[in-house]
Amino acid sequence: MTTTNNNIQTATLGNGCFWCTEAIFQKIKGVLTVKSGYSGGDIENPTYKEICTGTTNHAECLQITFDSTVVTFEDLLKIFWETHDPTTPNRQGNDAGTQYRSIIFYHNEVQKITAEKYKKQLEESNVFKAPVVTIIEPFTIFYEAEKYHDNYYNLNKSAGYCQFVIRPKVEKLEKNLATYLL
Image (cartoon, rainbow, N blue to C red; front, side):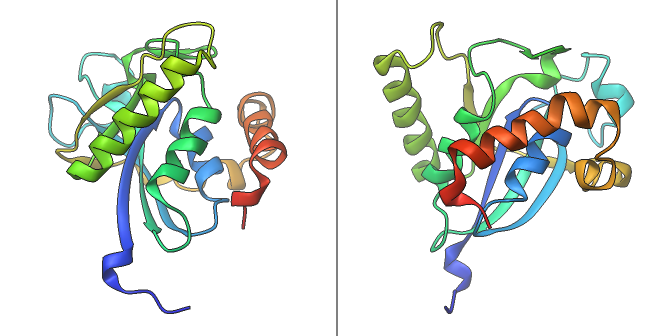
């Protein structure tokens, strides 16, 4: 299959700890790169230590490049919403703070419309017992996280956090969304 540069797109999503979400999106067909980082905040070039204070307004997020002929932005949103709890503001499980908020940074008007439409459908279908609190806002800038965050789950599978927090999310992905997997 031949792709053109027009087919290569970018999505920036925040759905909790980027170690968890990186492990999920790395397994998706059509995803070319997954970078952990920070977006949506008030300071330039934040560090992990700074964003963990909750004072920078940055969210832990992923910048995903993908081939839209293989996986669509809507497909990525399906995976996004099904692999985290979009009803808990500033929290995913035991990870609490504004950096863990559910957020979609749209890169163009099509992404904005797609995200808003999908969120509205979720709200109207009552799939979740509580309101969907996912924020949808324009993308401005992405700061790549420190290198030690790269490929975290795959390099640290035996670590406690990986075993008890990330592995169950990956297993849920493999069980419920297998058609999207590499």
